[in-house]
Length: 129
Image 1 (cartoon, rainbow, N blue to C red):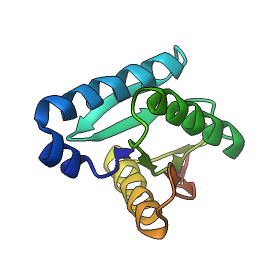
Image 2 (image 1 turned 30 degrees about the vertical axis):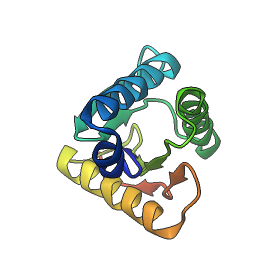
Image 3 (image 1 turned 180 degrees about the vertical axis):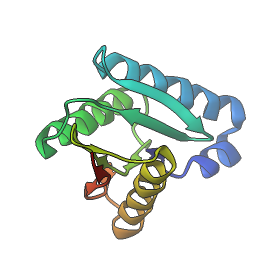
């Protein structure tokens, strides 16, 4: 997941404002995440979220919508692009492959639309165990 137009935010409003947005996004992720979720800043304006037991598309969409609502309470013009990779208990994948596929989905979603909270289609990744 990344923050749309983050470079422009930094360029137009300064890095302290960009840092404030990064902290707010991190706080929003923490607020809506479950105890079993693993969420971390991956680099720059990118975040990686691992959501166990979140196989249903509606559950993933609810998560992203809740995150968007939390962020929009603080920043009306801050939006996200999200790439989703799905694995299951009977599948596994190399971490690099999972991250690359999620990144591809995120950029495809970003390119496909200018709507808020662009969500790429989930890609099923992994080898049968």
